[in-house]
Amino acid sequence: MSFEHLGRRYEIYMQSDVHRDGMALELMDETEHPYVLVLEVFYADADGKLTLTAHREAVPLELVERVTSQAKLRLPPSNIR
Image 1 (cartoon, rainbow, N blue to C red):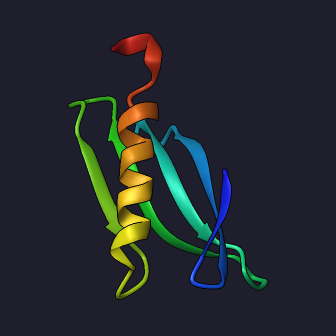
Image 2: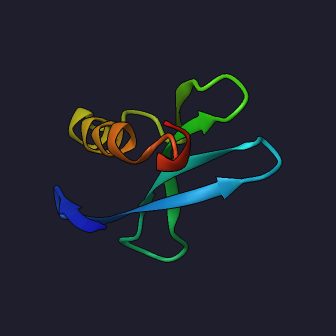
């Protein structure tokens, strides 16, 4: 799911993480190479919690809202709801 915000190009990816035992949505800034991880919403299989980690300072609230709304729809995996 790619989109633009304030002249920058972003993509949201779904990832599986076997080391942390869960799944995540990652927001990548793909405006320039190398692409930069902006934030991640992680679903932990062990306790069912969703957590947000920002990898950049001063992330616009609109981006946080966009990714968290997607995370609520797409995480946890549909087979364990």
